Length: 300
Image 1 (spheres, one colour):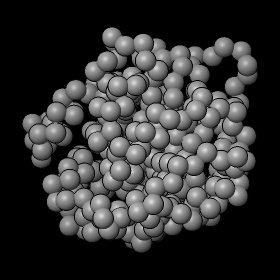
Image 2 (tube, one colour):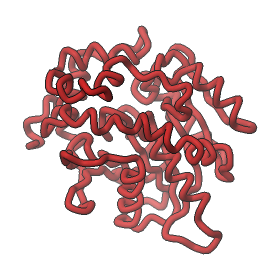
Image 3 (cartoon, rainbow, N blue to C red):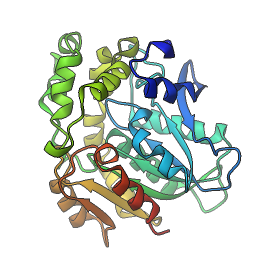
Image 4 (cartoon, rainbow, N blue to C red):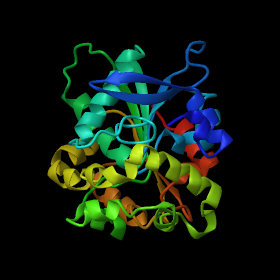
């Protein structure tokens, strides 16, 4: 997509400051904070969720830049990154892309903030961190903060549209996705008090529909059965972690809200949890100041 054709000035401004790199035969778009070259602040990598993009972080970008140097990619299949099809999208491939981004930018120590789909990517990266020997390696993960996401498949409550897209009807339904249907489904995961407006929905949809990206929704949604397939590995990554973990959760989220927090308390010893009552699935959009504070306050 030509950036000038994006539907809002803030969207055009966001992507005008992005870079891209080759990831195999594809390209990954990413943004660095403006202080990347001039600051010695810690690196914070931000990994977005399904079905959106790095633009999810716009409400907290400036504030977090005061404390961190930021890296935020559009994962493969999302936003303005490549959207190959057919393609076997996987969480492990997305983790490979994050590691490639870190190597490209010569990052040796970093922290991670993830949301939704990005939480599964974070769990895979954390599992790799645990598996690595004590000897020096290219980069070291220092902390993980997780926003609302399906950390445990038994507590994940996917929306009806996601279930249908994963079914044999998926390709047929994907062809019929449009801005109106997307808007209804997307609004349903926000709290009643923090509903996105039409302009915001236009922005999100433009990035999803870029390069007919809505048609690959059934392929991207394979992360849901992956969570079941790799449950032992990814839950163990949380329970066995020796680095700081913080869960920041909008409790009003129908997908992974209070019920997921209860399961987290059952499985994780001495859990560090920041609960956000009255906030839905997108805390970084619905309660940006509280999310920024929770990330800044995470103990290392």
